[in-house]
Length: 161
Length: 131
Image (cartoon, rainbow over all chains, first blue to last red; front, side, top):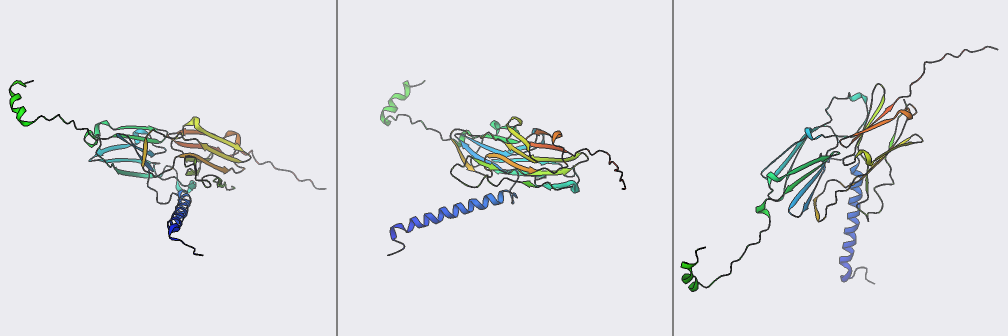
């Protein structure tokens, strides 16, 4: 009896793929705890209709600690976390939270309307709404009903509206 | 001073990956000593003070922060660096901590728990009687 049949060969591959996926996800869980090489802040990017939404986790940040700027489709967020030296190092029993200066630049996939950007910071969670620029949005082009060339010549004089 | 061993709950996070919305995350923490005792700080972005539960039971301090998910209709996730989920972590308190005077406050998504030391009374000399 054959172990692999041609018909089921792909299914076996799919099973393997699923297995590897699960394994990789398991590794993610393991590495989430020591925050292994994770950039700060962590952010998610969503597309909602004609707008992009960036959410960033900025615990401990007040609005005045943040510096937000945009140029050429690149959004830059920078700030300072936990002033170093606030608490002497030898007093720490455990130190897992990141500290110091940070900066992140996010390039947005499409052109955005720089003047319409909205930002909101609540409980250490930043929500940045970036509406797409009108030129980046799909535009419906109106097609005028064509008239035959010969008729147009005759109508041109009395069609001054 | 006895060590306080933070024990992240292991029964969370892993297991069924059927419901990705139900993620439970372990928040990063700092613990440092002050004159009065210990101070614990935890990063809980997206958790407001009314969505935070903090309880002490049998020497175990548990913090649970509920995150209101930013579910927006028609939103397509294009890039993801963090999972949305509630925060859970628990710690074993040492006997030095005065359980009745524990206080906490939330500022910009950071929880600060003050764990004061038990105020020791002056050492009392015990006279030893001889038979």
